[in-house]
Length: 125
Image 1 (tube, helix red, strand yellow):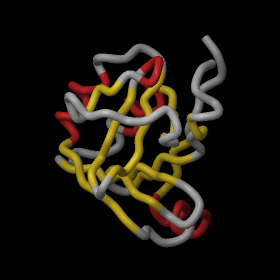
Image 2 (tube, one colour):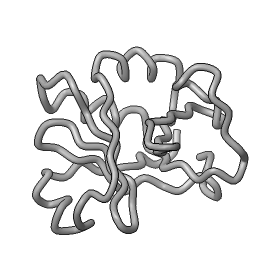
Image 3 (cartoon, rainbow, N blue to C red):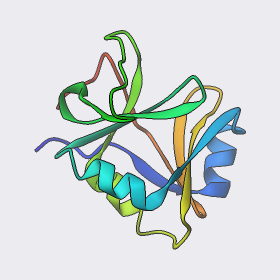
């Protein structure tokens, strides 16, 4: 297994480091836990038409079911283990996938996940 991708910051640190949220979409935390059970190593996020889209290993679409993405669509790739760690940081029901000026972040409670790798070009370990 390769290097772990992604880092969890406090919401305030993320705001200082990456700037304000320009666009976001919410998602149910329990639903995300179920969705990522379908992948082993990687979870990739992107906002498509204002909605959350998620890919798993091999850029396989795991949410929403039946969605199609092109090979050129850039997703932010995180290690599944880091996403799972983020999901232990709060008891809230909702998390947010957010576009900021330069990056995509995932915020849950007072914690924000960033430092994902763009896929393409960095799609696999």
